[in-house]
Image: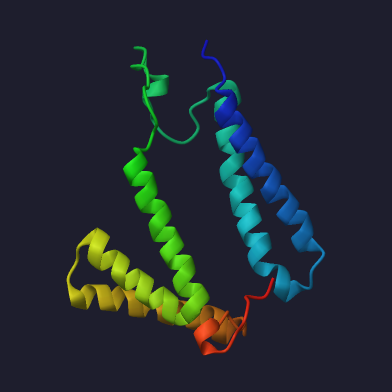
Length: 164
């Protein structure tokens, strides 16, 4: 019988709790305003419940894993991510947030995605530009045209702080 990883269980319960809170908060909004939070919270709950069942009862619901093999898996040592990789991820996230804050969503997303796929994925200039342009078009079409939302324009475009 496997023991329950309390850290993983706590994290799953925390994520499920946040998703459930967002679900109930979204219900109180008008129909257009609750679409995205309701969708995200429902998907998070649908993903989190099998993880919770798996953690509590060790039932393989969704994938094969070494945890369920007949032989015991080798013990895990160290951190799952090396410090350098974690720092790299945090710097990319900080850069993305800085671009959005300074240049706004539309311009920040294009620049960030172009830089990311060019540097990290290491693809050519044209594919990087096409991927960036396609994502920009998708975001502009979905949020700007269909949902008629005004995304943060950035401090260089005249906005002072993002709406909270």
